[in-house]
Image (cartoon, rainbow, N blue to C red; front, side):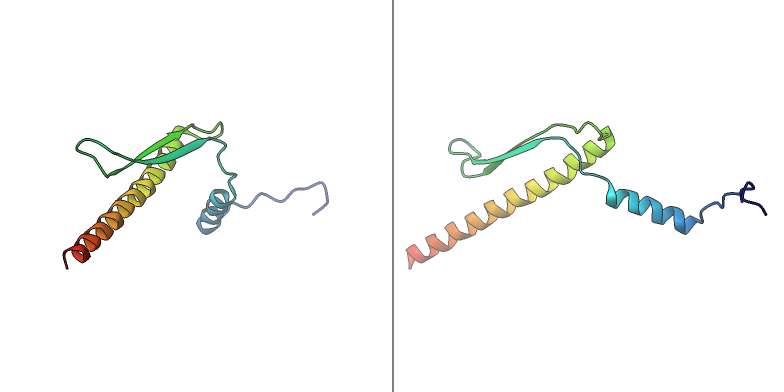
Amino acid sequence: MTDTEQTPERKPTPTERVWEAFNAVLLKPPHRGSESTSYSTVTVGDMKGRTVVKHDVVRGEEETWDEFRARCQRQWADLNADATAYDAGRMQRELEASMEATK
């Protein structure tokens, strides 16, 4: 075989293709969208004492709509869990304080 002849390109195995896809996901640069989150506690009405989350998100330029929706869903799940845990902890502390006051 001479230098001018080229060997046929070998097709990657399924394992190699999975490895390439896995690395592409891991090495993908982060999105360039912006986001801001704020928490507040309701002071009046039926929701008094509950934590409310306001989360504003902007889709990144390189981000597809499916990636954007998936990112928003993950973030909302985390934020909701945080707010629920905070409210539960606050309610537990209030209950313990009221129990101590009645002794």
